[in-house]
Amino acid sequence: MKAAFIAYNQAFVDEVEQILHQLNIRGYTRWVDVQGRGTKTGEPHLGSHAWPGKNMATLCIVEDAIAPILKKRIQGLDHSAPEQGIRVFFWETMDV
Image (tube, rainbow, N blue to C red; front, top):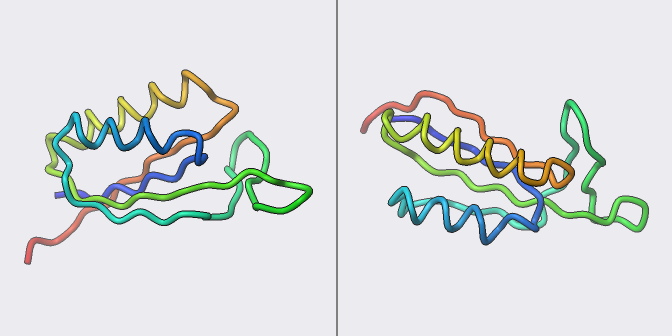
């Protein structure tokens, strides 16, 4: 199992929801109005007058076999609108 943390511009909320649904990822936690800036390119999304954009974040636990598919789908979304910004990060989880 892997934990997947997806950070994205609020403009992608419907697309992220659709990807989770299509991959049958039912359980997740979403945070709204997340502030931050990417490490490589793009403008900060700080919800302020100077930097008005807002981010969201979603955390889900996925089967190992689903992780590369989720990564590819998120990367495809990023390539479709790179100025918006979306990233997915994975780490191993322990079964309980």
